[in-house]
Amino acid sequence: MTCVSMLKKIAALGLLLALTVNAGFADSVTEYDLKAAYLLNFAGYVEWPDSPKPVTICVYGNNPFKAATLSTLLAAKAGQIDAAFKYPLHSAQLADCNIVYLAQSEQDRFDKAIALLRNTPVLIITDIQDGLPEGSMINLITESNRLRFEINISTVLAAKLKISSKMLKLAKIVP
Image 1 (cartoon, rainbow, N blue to C red):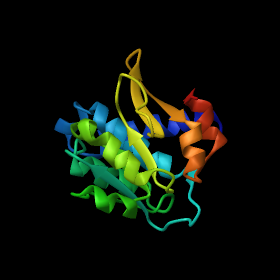
Image 2: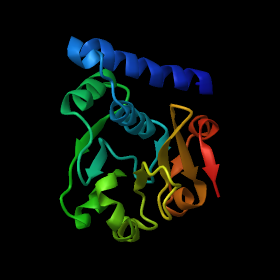
Image 3: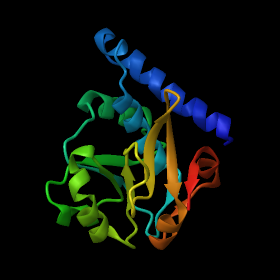
Image 4: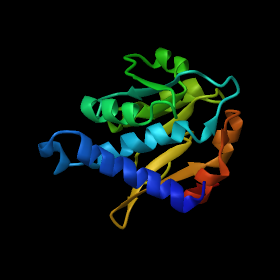
């Protein structure tokens, strides 16, 4: 799959969101609807040492994602990506996740969560506009009104995760 085809798939998921939910929702696809699509798509481009089934995507902190959006995305990816969303209440539960999205509500506690997960095979994703937090692996950012992502390769490698070259081509790489 080329970079262009991956971008087309992400755009198609956004369109799918707009078309498959109710008409009121179609007019208001949000930034977090797109971020939810990214989280789910990332699961298909990352290799974990133990190949988890399903991939557990945890949202830690105030959940910015709509339940209808997540349900629609999971249904659209059925048969392609086996994933489930969970919402841990305590940082000790994060080690049971394969992907952790640290919500902005937890920004003051990122250090604790990241320290707990350091060098474990858990993909840590944030969406801080002021730069990739130390220890985070992927940061979702908005540039020129477009959703993009940056990746800290050294943190990913320390966690013994492998990210597809197709995904790396689309990312801004942070040393």
